[in-house]
Each structure stands twice: as structure tokens, then as C-alpha cells.
Image (tube, rainbow, N blue to C red; front, side):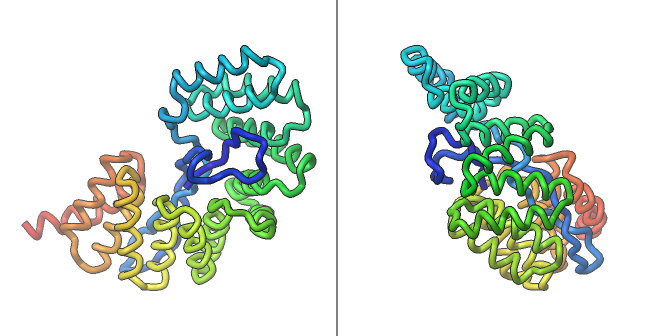
Length: 295
């Protein structure tokens, strides 16, 4: 899944090509099978995953040349700011978005882009203000509804978040984040049928993203549908083997099936990928003794 940094002024930007992918915080879902700790679903909107290919020095240099040739064009600064964001150069990104907005105070995409940087820096109030401004300037801007909804959801304001996701979806957004993150709210409220439907829509819009497969798998686990859950977790691993949650989720199904040795192996791999990932820590602790006994 991906977060939007709109490099152009188009209101609809292709998710697969122009949005920055994100990793996020883990939402623990209450899955009470065999007395196991809950597995986790990744929020896709918290921190920018650095994409060096989209933020290379060469690309930034070429964008700088464009700006030098036309320093009064806000589009150039917005585009370079997006590249800086993808490269993890957030201070430079902010400078460019600020300059773009000085040149064009009604540049609503630049407000949304700056809001994403603020969110990445933990400045939720500043981000919220920018999303509000973007929506005042462009009331049908789906990216801003989704971004603001993410802030509300992380703050625990689930009704407000749901309203924003519904607004984006009502605008016929093709952004998978609207469905994925609405699915997380349904999941948190134990409405797993609706969650599965939303995760499935997110998958149809972004089939190469691992996160919605993890999300849907969690809801399948909650409905005791281990076969579909296992298929989703394995698909998530095949799409992105670097996500600790995918391996921990796979391990959970192994554990539910009584295959403690494989469960321990997958939990251990998850812990290597993210030593701070609590579900993996808990899983290793639960299954370690079983592997010793099996040996």
C-alpha cells in the first residue's frame, strides 16, 4: 500500500506509479483462538518508506535544473519536494512545498504533500491544518480526505476517520488506501465481513501490495477461516518478504494448526526483520519450548 505525494496538479494520481509507499503502526486485533496473542495489521500511512529509485540525486538534479530555468513555477517546487520526500530529505521537501505555496497559495496538492511530511515528522496538528486547507480549496480532493482520515484514525477518532474514508469512496476514488484503512476500522469493530470486503477492494486496486492481504488474513483468522488466512499471509510474504507482520501472521496459522516447529521458525524470522515487533516476540516465547520438545 502507498501514501500519496502528488507530483502534479492532477486530482487523480496513479497509485502504482506516483505515490510513496508507507509502513505504519501495528493495529492489534483481538483474535482469540487457542488463547493466542493477536496478530497485527499494518497501517499503511504513518511513515514514508524511503524509495531511493524515486528520489535519486540524479532525478533531483534534473528537477533542480527545471526550477532554475523557470523559478516562478510552483509546479517545479512541488515536484522536487515530492522527490525529496521519497529520498527522506524532509527538510528540503518542506522548503520546496513552502516555496510552491508562496508562489501559489491555492495549490491544494502542495498542501496535501506538505501534510504528509508533517505527519512523517509527528506533527499531526500541522498536517491536519494542511489537509483542512486543501479540502477548502478543493472539496472533492480524495487524497486529502484519506490523509485527514488517517490522522483521525490514529488519534482514535474512528467516527471522524470513517466519515472521511466514506467521503473519498463516495467520490469514486481509485486510491486503495481509502478501502484498506476503512477496513481496519471495521476490523477493529469486529465487523469482519465488511473488513474483508474492503480489503478485497483494496487488493483489486493495488494487487501487488502486501498490506491488504495481511489485513484480510487477520479477519479470516477471526472468522476461523484458517485456509484463506494462510493463503493471504503467504501471498503477502511473496509480495514483500521484508514485512515482519506477514511472517508473524503466517506463524500464527501454523501455531493454530499445531505445527509448533514451523510456527517458531516464522516467528523467529519476523523477529529478525523487526526486533521490536511484539507479536513476534510473544510468538517466539510461546513456541520455543515446543520446538525444544520436538527435537
